[in-house]
Image 1 (tube, rainbow, N blue to C red):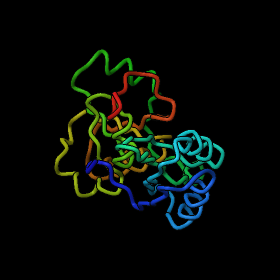
Image 2 (tube, helix red, strand yellow; image 1 turned 90 degrees about the vertical axis):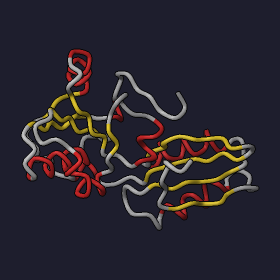
Image 3 (tube, rainbow, N blue to C red; image 1 turned 180 degrees about the horizontal axis):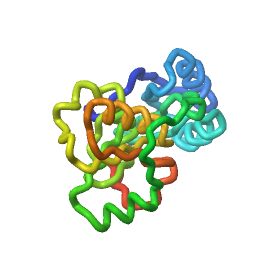
Image 4 (cartoon, one colour; image 1 turned 120 degrees about the vertical axis):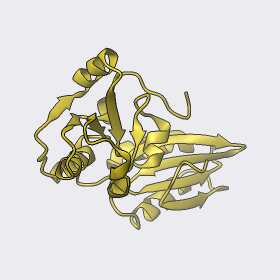
Amino acid sequence: MENLKANMILDATGLACPMPIVKTKKAMNNLEAGQVIEVQATDKGSTADMKAWAESTGHHYLGTIEEGNVLIHYLRKSSNDEAIEKKHQNIINNEELEKRLEASESIVVIDVRESAEFAFSHIPNAISIPLDELDNKLNELNKEDEIYVVCRTGNRSDLAAQKLTNNGFANVTNVVPGMSQWNGKKTGIND
């Protein structure tokens, strides 16, 4: 799928457990925090293995797509998100955003996660602008819109909210804790 951008592609086809995980672990060491790896595997047990391994190491399992007999897993390398100091003053929790979305159609939700994260699961009608692309997309946004910024945990969205505010956007709110705990309506490529 061309809309799923990975920073690294790892071929683990033909390998049996535990080799897809062993190779993924080694490859993950070469990624920077926040980058996405695509792991291609034919071991049918690799989906459960990838999920369990990601959970145990703190990395983020994004999802798996089947193409023929190949399972294509997407994982995002963990970062020290918790160490980032939150500075943006306007904050809303997931439940409040869900209520506002149900009550108003004039809200703009910007999802600043990586494109692969967005593709697997996002708030309906959210706009995907990965954090590293935000500077180049500022002119595509209306500075007067009521904007809610979301990411996985509220940390990248905090940085994005600060950036938007610093560039003259009047009504920007960071959504915490973000998609990691979003219980509202979602859509994605598997829906």
